[in-house]
Image 1 (spheres, protein in one colour):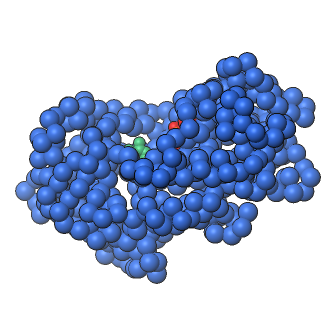
Image 2 (tube, helix red, strand yellow):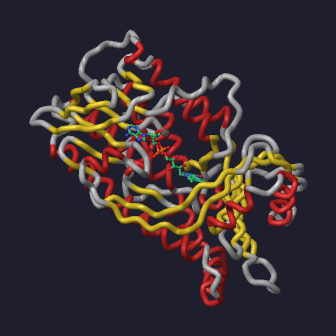
Length: 417
Ligand SMILES: Cc1cc2nc3c(=O)[nH]c(=O)nc-3n(C[C@H](O)[C@H](O)[C@H](O)COP(=O)(O)OP(=O)(O)OC[C@H]3O[C@@H](n4cnc5c(N)ncnc54)[C@H](O)[C@@H]3O)c2cc1C
């Protein structure tokens, strides 16, 4: 369906151009395309592999129920149920104090009246499923192998120039083009960024014991190590270490890596073998100083990046997606301009409190759980005991982790667009 390669989709000007066909950009295109909004989506990569027969890649995302509602609006409800593993229990094990017994605490979904917190889903399955939705939507055109090179906001439109010389004229440009966003840079939006000097090792493992739909996170010197349940006897790993240490670990021979992970897992999952090769992802905290410029908005990792601890990144991004989809559709239904300064400023006003509070909170938490000083370890262990023992505190912590208390739009609540 690449227009450059002559697909048959109508060649009208789009309402919206989306830069970036990652999970956030595709979800936005899918939701709007299903509502008949004309969308052109640009990505330097090719179309992802077809869903049929696709095996899970080495990275997964734990998505809370509100995010699953948003993805259902993108038309992939059946895929969520087919490929997702329910997250029913979160277990934290703090064994950061040599010589002391580890502290183990469970946070169960049914404790706050929910059957599950959400689902864990492979990134590549989500991406292929979203791509299939946009391919089926008459209103969406995908420009694979292209990047946004330049744009210029005018009175009524924005002209978006691609690297093949093609110029698209739309009402609004949405930058969902990731942490090194070209749209953000071209719009002159500045950022605050902190590199942690840490990386997350990710892979999928097979194990001999059942995970019982429990995600287990070990807090120990270096950084947290999480085992997140997948379908069957498989789990995905997110293992945070200093970048130097992480690179040394993924360079280990396969059996030595498996053995190291086995020891670190305290055998909770029985025998472990690797299903996918370990990979390393450098961690940072990033926040854009603004979410809009004339006829332009930025969202998802173009606007904010967080450490993967507490699994907030895509959950936050999907709330950006929902807010933007609602903004665009509401404007079009009222015969208004979805790229007007009122619309883009309204989007920014709506999203800033949620983005600011999540990025600040996750940054603080990352510093606390990756800290090896004795007073911080004591504080962390005391905090875990207090939160788990005092029911209202425990419930409040679980509800905050689930979000969204600040931006509860229609889509995040499972209501129609
Ligand atoms: C180890 C790890 C574990 C994680 N676990 C979780 C979790 O459990 N739960 C959770 O909610 N989140 C999690 N996250 C976060 C989540 O994976 C990311 O937030 C999400 O994948 C980012 O999606 P995105 O669409 O914003 O960005 P990206 O996936 O980076 O997509 C950006 C797209 O833009 C394209 N692009 C780049 N430049 C241009 C250009 N000039 N023009 C057009 N397109 C361009 C790129 O090709 C890319 O396809 C995790 C992150 C990590 C690192």
